[in-house]
Image (cartoon, rainbow, N blue to C red; front, side, top):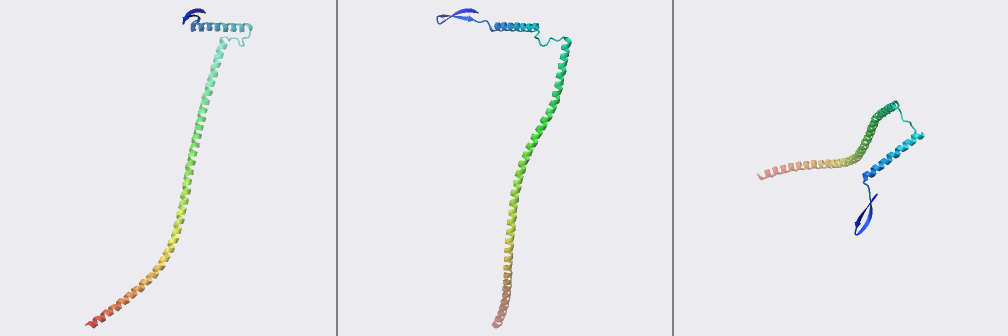
Length: 180
């Protein structure tokens, strides 16, 4: 590191001059690369490398095997995706049916309460009407018997009127005979 001096408020200070960040990163990258090469060389020299490098045929076979496995996985995923879609559709349908069932239950409950209330009101109205009919029938019978009595009184009054008219006519004729 280089040192540079600068003056601040009359005092001289020594400040280290830092290399640019790109240079630091390049140095670290080179050091890491050298370390990994040294470790790899030491492992292969000591026999600690777990897998020796494959030859071209083994490499091609490995690639073909990996491609076949990849295709098999893709085929399984495709099949499971279809099954998953069916399962998702069934779950969606089940949720929809349950929601419709709950809505239908609410509607039924509302309708059944309406029917119960309406039936109760109708039964009460019918009972009230029957009671009124019985009371009116009794009133009609009473008034019919009173009418029969009034009819008899009218008949007697008409007979009395007819007799009185006859007497008046006779009296008028007798008077007219006496005036002449």
